[in-house]
Length: 231
Image (cartoon, rainbow, N blue to C red; front, side, top):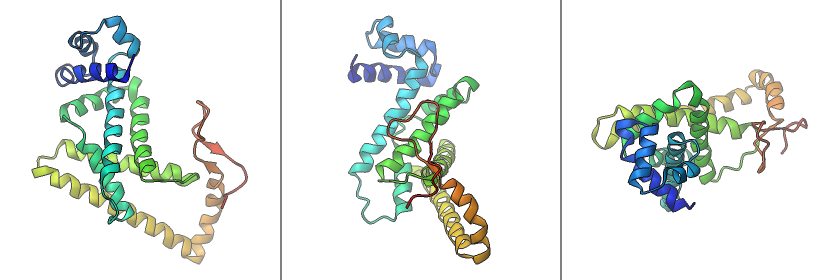
């Protein structure tokens, strides 16, 4: 099975998703349209339409990364680079109805964890493409905050009818400004003699947390060093 074969099946499915969702009917119709034996299609995507939905989301991450590498970001501040990446990720979505169907799928209790992983994966991909090298608690906080920003912006975009989605990009800028204000507020708390001391203990404890290793265990989300914060 090749990536080209998987892409062909996914492309065939996208024609049906706006009408039938990420369903078994879509999966079977995609296999027929792609001229693919159903058993072969199932071997390629054992989870059927769910696997196709995951592949579609990850394809969007790949397209965003490709466009981000081609973009000239030299004149942008770091928060502007993050905002540009979020915008590019949304702009590669070819059909709002496909996204709505995906959100409905991953809102189901049995698929909610998968949806959360995909959202986290998008945030992680953006940070990695922008050269993030954090290995401590910041690795988690950056991705958690960006997941919230991206998720909120996508929801706004789905209902946005403004020209060229100008209202969505203004909304995104406001969210990024809010993140910047939050980070500045934290910095001021650290500088304050009273609040700075209050923050020392929890920050020392959080300093033991490390990002997942290159070959993480499947049952652990990260690492705990037990040695305090490393410089």
